[in-house]
Image (cartoon, rainbow over all chains, first blue to last red; front, side, top):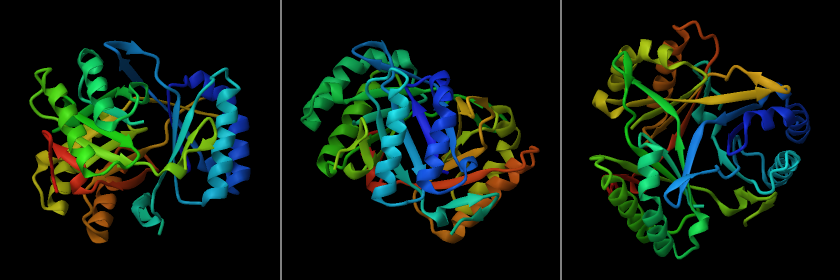
Length: 109
Length: 109
Length: 109
């Protein structure tokens, strides 16, 4: 954690920005870079009766760190995605409570 | 938003209903049809030691609009899915808070 | 429900443990085994500029059953996953409220 769950952006595009993105996210969150994961989901999107390109979207799953960190993280992610000639991207945060998150069977809170 | 995150229903089936479904959802939510996305996730389901068909499930990610709209939206989605000869489907709602949702780096709330 | 949403563990590995896992989860949750679903998501993970193995992670989506059941369920899932020579796994719980969950168009609460 934080986990980035990506749709509508290719694994190649995310890989291209991943080193700088993770370094910068680690500075913003003041945590080690190996806490981050970036998972690109395979999806097929439909609209208007046919298959369409998937809208670029990243859900960040994390423990709550407050508005300032969240704003900076969203801006950081957006900047790196848009560097890949992706004009629009939406980023949303979903919060896990520490007592609901288990590492190797043990709760974090 | 709202986003439909689909499992256990094929992209072809969702595409077949997508035009009418999105039109009707736009009327229920009183928002433009281009706010909706329909993403079909590629998954493999297992049970009883083997691969099985994925249970039809749609998660709707949205900003809270209250019980009346939610009931109508769930009924609408269910009706269209069941028109594809899918007998059972479950629909669940997950809520994003506007201040946790960013469009091109800027928070919605 | 509960739904297990799996990443970074193969469908073959999950299938291999699924019978015992579901039986044990049914005992812990005191519910029928056919309430459980196990969906393995197809994802591509990236880190450090390249594709990497996906970190083993299972999200359990359920109605809240409290800390004791949650602790036991997390321990049960972790034990079965680690029996597949997977050293590390993280398990997180996400809660649906019954009034936000619809079976065939009708809310559960």
